[in-house]
Image (cartoon, rainbow, N blue to C red; front, side, top):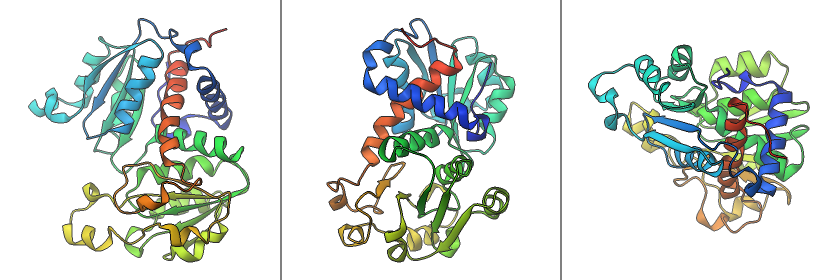
Length: 307
């Protein structure tokens, strides 16, 4: 039995296999409509979510399985004080696989240590979000045909953004990757990411506060929102929430084959006028999230690919 808590739980070869399976699912979803008949996915979401929770549910339903769970801590026994450890022990008797989102870093790891079914980390605080990373990798591979030899710009909240942290971990394992880290000084990438991932692996990167100056060198621009829920001070959030707004004017400086990604939800950081640009890939990215989660569920449940 395997769990997925961090992108590093998967080797590069395993990620490539998941991407290949997800790409095959995209081509003919109907072939996979019954591979998980009789299987149940439990979704334990202690934090609000739209795309992640619903894409997990859509993925399992598309595979012929069923879904049970809760969408907020208030609607679970956590409101009565039940621990994650006790919850997962109970849920292990009800389902075959589990996806958990929790505001506390390490909660998914704790769940996996007590679970008798595979556990998927659907986001734990500001730490990791491995299935969003797999979604991002599938999207980049589908758009660019590769996961190597490119310059990736990460813009916005690089301090608290778990999607950014996970993506850096994953892309750092591919050759020829260069990062441009675009953020206000208060939201710079954490030192531990810089030191243990970028510096330790000799990954080329530069940090800047200016999005305009970075645009022309990027192959991928990964925009993120400034996350209100990660701030302790409302004044700091208000001051930084509109630091970077991508609009048509900025897009004039981008390469014709540069693509924009965003884990969503979007607030103000991408103007709606950019949505019609053929380089805007964030809604397609959300669609790819279903295919990669279908592939992951099949893999963790050791379900065979249909003939």
